[in-house]
Length: 344
Image (spheres, rainbow, N blue to C red):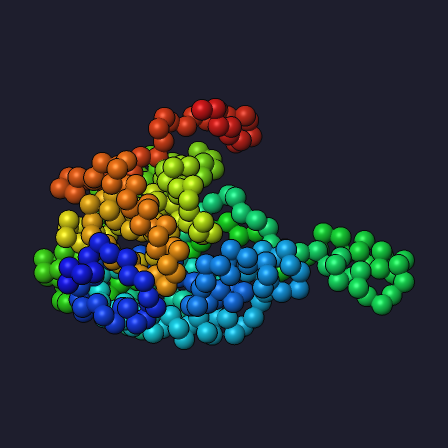
């Protein structure tokens, strides 16, 4: 790989920029692409996103993702198939491709990646408890009906509690795809240093790595099996205006699980505010970022620069990368009938 790309963030269209990278040069791709919801397509514009209520349809204050349009998924598939083809080319044999999605369009994303030639190994789930309910009451539409007030009031009572079909979403799916190996896993790993998983990495309370990850304390059983460190206030940066920043610990978990060498290159073709790149640097890995928005690139550069000043480099020679779940243990006490309460 040419040094002109290593540890750099390139401003440009992902598809065009990917074509500039060497084949079989990347160890891991970890990214969070545009989901094509409410016009948030591959032409993602930071200023439009900042004023997203201006192009939400029906009601100005609707949160993103409310408008349902079957064409969104079709367009997403067509575009991401091309992206996945290029990612397949640049990945080393056995290299992994992790891509976040919304639950609604996950099937389109995975189909595109599958059809591009990847092996779909698994689906990771980022589980969380806090999110904005998007279901909407129909009162606004009832008020506009050309009917008398009594009929409209009766209809409101009849439909009280019945809302549009948007359930509260409390997880994000992450596809785990892999480029086919050259020969056996052993032969491939000895040649390219990719294709296997590092099971020294632990989550929860020293548990074997799993495909479910949570950054929220939920209950004793879930925390024991799936919890990784929660993002702190410093992590994002008060200058970071990106709307969908992913937890650093989640990206570190995936990078630790799938990359072996200090020379491993982690690619994020939709860098956003740079969490994947920060995680790679924090773990002593090399990175390449691509983003079409200059504003996001500047945010990512500031985060990486602050990392150099504030964080010690990860010891990549160590055999184990242990993700700590708490600064101090969380304890629970039983309340009866199987209920638990967090006490510390």
